[in-house]
Image (cartoon, rainbow, N blue to C red; front, side):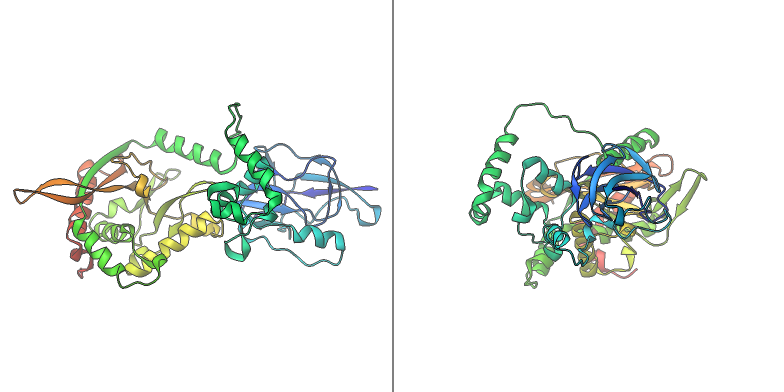
Length: 420
């Protein structure tokens, strides 16, 4: 017998270290080649790593939340002498096992044991894998509806018991596990949750943004009755419900047009050089809630897209963020961000600026209520916009004037489509 040291590979994009997100193995476990051993967290993604050899786990580098340098020992295996080596490929070569969690693939093998291991390897996010592990649920029992059979959050929730249809479709062997998961959820025990991975990154960035940026928040109400009538008219010509327009792309078009008049709001701040970078193109961040936490996928050159194409691109990047199929380069480089909680949007919010940007637009819930219009009380569809700006670089007057410009276009939606 001999030892095989599996070193942390280069995860790309100049990563020099990575945080342990989760282990799928324990010391003493017998692992087959290509079995998943755990996830490593970078600033933008969770990366699943597979074992390069078959052997017994005799040492792990640390616990979830610990940071490991590229090239450092991650897992030490006890292997047969014929297969043993003392190290993996050089640290500057990305290991073949290092694939983004959303794109992990099963490689071919000739051994029966490894074939069995790979056949049960289910594509899903680390967050879903962790929930399944805590609930004692075998992911192989869940039918995935995502790309390539990937198990999505809704697939998992339905399996656990979110609907009677899912409960009937689940194998009989899953019933005790579902019952156990439900009972555990109703327990009153205190549970310690370590702040690691994406949640830690979100916490750090939010704290930094609120500490360093003097936020100026401005709220304006908008009558979107005419906009809603236009939206419904356009959607009446669309057969596929998934392709129907929401209010969001109209708001994005209005924002893009307003930024031409207020370019100081389409700016990022390089604090290391103390320089403001005013951008000609609008790279629109779309804050998206996912099973792993809040992500901000980016619609590149949103100012060059017409309404339908912009709506399609917003749908694409948002869904890709939710199912972890999004590329790393699509999670950075935004110049201004829009955030919306949809039906949960409330009346007013105080959105936190997505550094290094200087502005963020928050969309609140649209509700029908009585208003005075032309001296008469009328029922109108009203919606608030809650915006925050970096008061160091955006004056309050300019921030309010830009939101008023957006308000004007949304209340008279024909203005959105008029040539400059």
